[in-house]
Image (cartoon, rainbow, N blue to C red):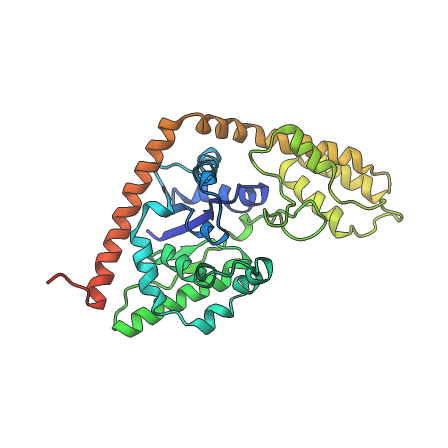
Amino acid sequence: MEIVLSGIRSTGRLHLGNYYGAVRNFVKMQHDYQCYFFIADYHSLTTHPKPDDWKANVKQVLCEYLACGIDPEIATVYIQSDVPETFELYLILNMLAYKGELERTTSFKDKVRQQPDNVNAGLLTYPVLMAADILIHKANKVPVGKDQEQHLEMTRNFASRFNNLYGVDYFPLPTAFNFGKNLIKIPGLDGSGKMGKSEGNGIYLSDDAKTVEKKVMRAVTDTGPTEKNQKMPEPIQNLFTILEVVSSPDTVEHFRKQYADCTIRYGELKKQLAADINRALEPIRERISYYMNNEEVIRKVVNLGREKARASAAKTLREVREIIGIRPF
């Protein structure tokens, strides 16, 4: 069975884009692949989060994973910091990474611009830790967005260098997992781009009904169509893209006809969109609340995930140490 790995930083929360773009597919995939889903709490240290936020952030993401339908009995759901073998592999892979290539990564250059007073070594070697996360379980496939494709290519490079240097065919060269027709890209509410935490344009799975409504009502629009059947500008098309995901076909057709004949009222469209988003999110919010208030359940999930992830990681690290010559006397 092929191995699939995916993770999310603990400083993030799942939003509509995460859910409809990937997580729903993860729920289906867990039955057909050997899946590892982890919460990247060490990755978050590159931005120096406060210690008091650590547990709350990790718990939030974990509860959202579970609320979306990821089953810890089927898939392996774990916290990155619970698997120290990853960080030893990270050290080993750093010996195969070169300063020049790390400095050329788009994510590093972006972070240098965003946080010029905190250009730490963790930012520079971020792709190496990401590679360790993937290779510690010898994953074949990694669901990644466009912004992470460069990191995945670097993972392939590190795996290939290891294999070539030591004359082995040990690490697979992981490829991007493509959801194909099931892939849904959810745009943001600011009129352009994708929905995301850093863009500040997202609707989160844990947002309450009033928050969702406020966010949708503030979504960017224009003054309305002036000619029948005119092409929609991007901000309006974005709203219809989300509408197509959460609303019934009849509702979508109703507003498309109104837009086509210039009778549409964006206020009505937004109210309907907010109501349909809330209808879709309500059962997920209830499950998030259930997990957030059940420490014992969360503790069992974390312990199970740690056990399963460390068993896989320990085997890989033992074999890597043997290959490179680190053996007990």
